Image (cartoon, rainbow, N blue to C red):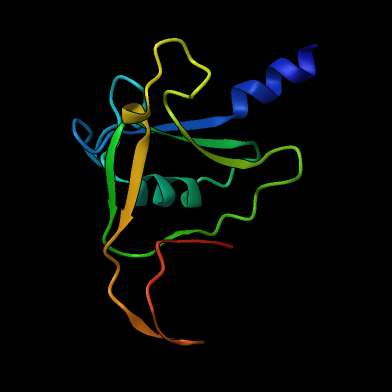
Length: 122
C-alpha cells in the first residue's frame, strides 16, 4: 500500500482551460494553463519518473503549431494521459462539456506532400 501511495504522489497533473487559463499559471485546477502547448512544454521539461495527465476543460483548444510530447520517462505502468475534465459517466455530463481540439497548424512539406500535424507523440 505504501508503494502505491508513493507513486500517486509522483504523478503529474496539469489542467488546461482555453477560456480562463494563462500559460504562466501553475497548471493546478484552480490556476489552469491556457494551451495544450504549454502543458506539453512543462511535461517535456519534467524528467521525474511517473505518470502525467493533462486535463482539458470544456471549450475549443486551438493548436496553432505542432504540439510535441517527447518525454521518454513513460512506461507501460506510468503513462501520459490526455483526458476531458468531465467524462461521459460523470453525473450531469452533456456533450457540450467535452473539449474540442482544433488545429490551425500551417502546412509544411512532409512524407505525403504538404501536411499539418496537431499532436506528435514520440
